[in-house]
Amino acid sequence: MFNNFRWKLTIVLIVFSLILSLFIALFDYNKLRKTVLEAQDTKISMIEDKVVKNLATIDKVYDLFDEQTAEKMKSYSKELLEKYKEEPDFRKWDFTSLKEQYKMDIFILNDKNTVIHSSFTEDIGLDFQECCPGFSSLLDERRVGDSFTADGMDIQSKTGEVKKFSYTPTPDHKYLIELGFLLEDHEIFRQFNFLQTIDELVQEYDDINSIKVYNSGGNALGVKTENFQQQYIQQPHKNVFEKVRGSGEPDELVLVEDGKQVTYRYIPYSADERKGFSTDRVVEIAYNNKVMTGLLAGYKNQFLLQLFVILIGSIILSFLIARLVAMPIHLAFHDSLTGLKNRAAFEDEISKRLERKNRKVALMMVDLDNFKAINDYLGHGEGDRILKIAAATIQETVGASNFAARVGGDEFLILLDSDETPNLKSLADDLLQRINEKMEFHLNEKSIQTSISIGVAIATENDDFESLYAKADKALYQSKENGKNQYNVFEFTT
Image 1 (cartoon, rainbow, N blue to C red):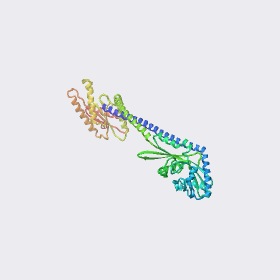
Image 2: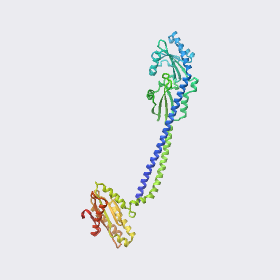
Image 3: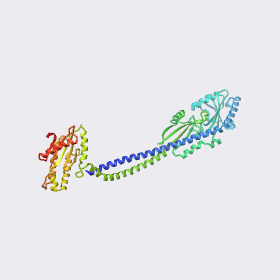
């Protein structure tokens, strides 16, 4: 019985240690995971700041040094207006010669905001109403006006080149004369090249796939296109792009590409000094979880190793603790000689059962007959052996579902659920017979024989341990008075 208790205690200690260790390990793992995620967010925020600050820097530089370019474009536009007055038929213009003369591309936009003539022939037919409705509305306003307008840094839609564009309406307000100046060859752009900064950031951080800066029309600045095909931001990216451009708030799109998760983050950007649509942009940062996944995988392996070490340590420690404390704990609630529960454990159990008013409780008090004579004539060693035999027989007879205890020298108490054991008399007869058989076998050659006397009491609603014990004691006394080796039930003696 003690070994069973020690094993149960060991298992309880192991389970408790594992639960506690698992909780601590999970807490540490989640803490590390949170740290990795926060570091990832910090890194992305830092990259965002670098790109946005670089854009702001180049915009400010152009604000300071761009007046000369704008004045040059204004002067050329006036010359082209004079040319229009002399020859309003653009078909007769030599746009190739004009480009060589001004070192700029020339575009003619009709009242539908479609490019009808250009030194850059690939743009002929470009329809701004179709591709860029918002920008097309702005072009309508410029065409009916009378002033020259120069935008900031923008993109040539079909080539991806970074350019500066200006717009001048013809006096009859039928057309817009557009000039395009290539900024990438400009010394200022080479000194403050945000595209180079973007490339360096992508090279520096393994978890960054790409960084793009889109103009208001959805074209990426600095992204060169092949065969002069227009490339606009596509779905599902376009929905998020439009949302960010409209709300002015960052947003994200998470996709699975080639079996790997990729997060696209969109950040709105507007220059301090607005120049049409060209200074409203959206930064796109596409980042993967490669570095973060690698770190988390490492932490997970560390967590599993830690858990394994804790498991082994917990098992060893639980065995040691169980070996050290099992006996003191066992003896606190068990009789050291017979292994049955002791009086303290019995009183605690019967108090709990008596509180359950919906169950009937019966108490059986068992006392060995002539036990003092066995101790006196056969010795205490033989007396202890007889007590162990009696205890084992009692436990075996009443079964594990009933509660047996040794509460004195030769006194045993049995706590029964009378609903589950309705025939108490039959159980008492069975116990008397088995004890007699055991004692006859073990004391066959001895001059002294022993038996048991039993007193039975069934609890009422008002009984507590003391009152029920007193009833069983009276029934036991009656069994002794009637000649021993028998039982009496309190209810039948009153």
